[in-house]
Picture 1 (cartoon, rainbow, N blue to C red):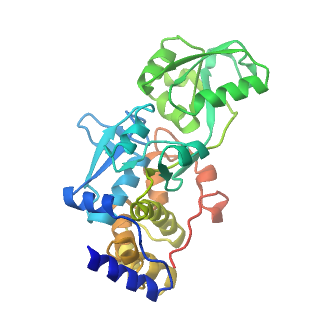
Picture 2: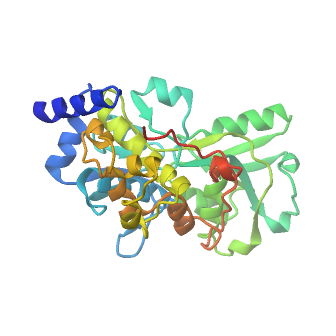
Picture 3: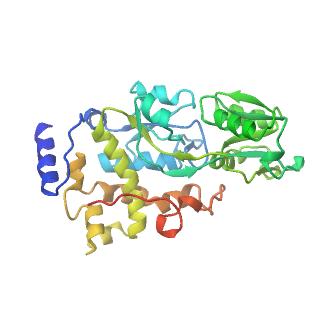
Length: 339
């Protein structure tokens, strides 16, 4: 291991960048057991959701699969742990999971007080409200006196309190630990309103008895940057997860996809060459092979492929790219360059 780190340091120094200096405990553990333990939701269509055979799919799932491909050369080298909002941080802190990739909002408190690091944003979101169409409500400002269903252990309760108080609206919270409990309560009419991130509303609406009888209101009342989380104290693993996310975003920007990555390995574009490892030693600086990003994209695709496959316009969720479009296409998805 010392020899590998020394090689990485020398390769990094030649490129004028800092070498990995932190403990590689998580990377060593993952390689030793042969898989990544990924914490996901208990079932959120489009983000992390199992089918009847227990096969997980979703945008958050694809990120874990991309990390597995980068680290192990095998996107199937992942085991998934479904977690409630209340359980998720404890599972990561305790070492039960290696990555938390579970529609989790990056906030100052979570990033500084829990011993955790957010490794980027794979979906920019905002909290919204869903109501029955029969109520005739067109705006959240018409919700005074409503009962509101949501999850415990999330940022949604505070956001609701802030919104209703600032707009001088009365309300009652009806909270549950498990997401499916919230859905069931709202579907049964135990509350007037369902609130969570807008992406979650579109996903959970699919579980309702009559999805078409419910509407998501236009207001977005918060910033909810969602992304993967790792433990503090292992900078190498933090960098691996962070740069795998950046890899997928950069690949989209540079026109590299799962279908053409082999062809693009022969590209003369310096940015593509560095991204795919045919020039430089950026993989070595992560403690990985220089084809780490090429492996991730080949197995999972670039960011656009993952988005379109899981939540995009041609899926049941039918979510437009919006702010999740690349910065060059009018959105705010932006990855630092590999150089």
